[in-house]
Length: 296
Image 1: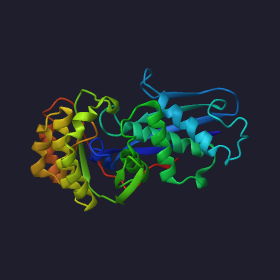
Image 2: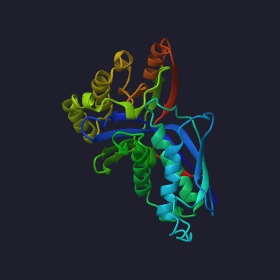
Image 3: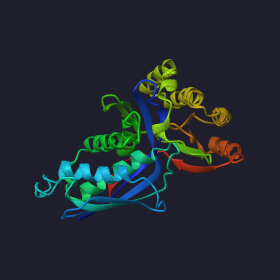
């Protein structure tokens, strides 16, 4: 049984490390997953295109859990529809750089879950939020996230901008957003699981302000305040964001870094690109996305 799905990466409005409330928006950069399920005893084997030594535990666990959850309802014999006895493969390829703060893990998890659902031919039986929560649970299981990243995962799965309570995996708000986006990613990488949670907790008052702004729909201002606070907490220079501020609607360190994402119009972002292109690393033009994960 074969299935295929895709899910976008995302940028940050509010980092959830300080208070458990987070906010993110989908970006037009994607991860695709292809899943094959074999009706025989075995294990799920993962592969990430172009990264032969990459950690594939997350996408493997997503397939296992999705088979456990939807396999019986899709007609699999329950005696063999457990993660320990159904074999398979999952392969992902992505435009989303890993360990760059652009929600590569959330995109991969969402794509893997949806591709498994597609392989099971259970597309009509799955609620997107339920599928999103399953991917979040898998991420917690394998230890690739501190908060569970329901904010990132929900933005990737649903599209648009979302605000979430990551302690309860609850969606607080979702809106569509239409903006041009510019991403600067320096050469270094940062892993979410390595973030200093105690230090991030010190900026909780600013995170609470960002939450208020986000729930009022002031996403640009919210992400700019977030970027300044969490750049300081996580040890990143605020200079790229400060350079961009006069030209954009909002700019922030994305996730736990190191990427910085700016939203605005083409003229303003062109000014920012000229500034950021003088820095080491890469810049990428894209847009926000209001559709999220989907079957292929």
